[in-house]
Figure (tube, helix red, strand yellow):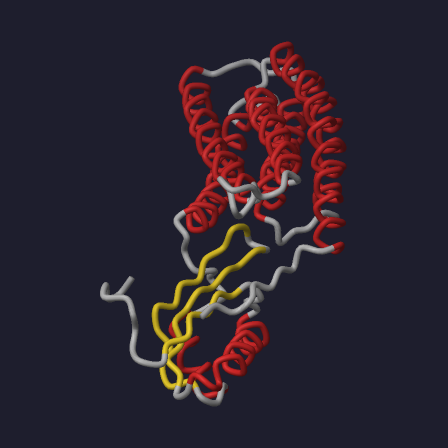
Length: 304
C-alpha cells in the first residue's frame, strides 16, 4: 500500500528556476567577454597572475554556460525513461565544475613554481589596469549569482568559480601595484599560489557535495537514524519503521521511501497521513513513498 506523492514544484519553484537561469546566462556572457580581454593583457604584460585568472575565467565561462544549459534542460518534463526529469543534470554539471576548479588550480601551481625558479618580467602598470577592470566585471558577475538561489548546488558551484575569479583579480591588482612601485617580480607567482590554494578548497567542497548527491547519499541535514524512532513515537498505530532510504535529486528535491509495520490494516490511511505529516514537519521531506505492512516485511533481502 503506497501513500500519495507530494511535490513542491509549483509556481515558486518555476519562478526561482527562471531567475537562476537568467542570472546564470548574464554572468556567463560578461565572464566570457572579459576573459578574452584578460588573456590578451596577460600575454602583453607577461603576468602569470593575469593569465592564471584568464585561464580560470575560461573554465568559468564554460562552467557558467553549462550551468545555464542545465537550467534550460531541467525545464524538460519527466518521461517514461527519466521519471525524475532532468533536474539531476544540474548536479552533474556542479561536479564537473568542481573538477575543473581542481585541474585549473593544479596548472596555476605548476606555472607559479616555474616562474619562481626561472623568473619573469612583468609590466606592473598594464597588469593593474586590466586587473582593476576584471575586478569590476567579477563583482558584477558575483552579485548576479548572489541574487540567485544560493541553496541550489549548481548556482553555488558557479558562484565559487566567480569568487575564485574575483580573488584572482584582487591578487593580480595587488601584484601589479607591488611590481609597479617596487619592481619585486616574485609577488606575481606567490599570490597566484595563494589564489590557487583557495580555489582548490572551494572546488573540493563542490566535488564532495555533488558526488554525495550523485551517489544517492542522504542529505547532510537529515540523520536517517532518527526517522524511525520519531515516527513510532509520533504516529499512533505504528509499531515498526524499517528500510528507510533518503536521497536527493537536487538539493531542493529530497525523497524518502520506507516500510511501516502497523497494528491494524483498518488504520492504514490514517497512518500514512500521519507519517507524511511528520516527515514534512520534522525532517522537511515532502515527497514520501510509504509501504504499509501488517504481517511482517514481504522483502526477504535484509538491509536493502
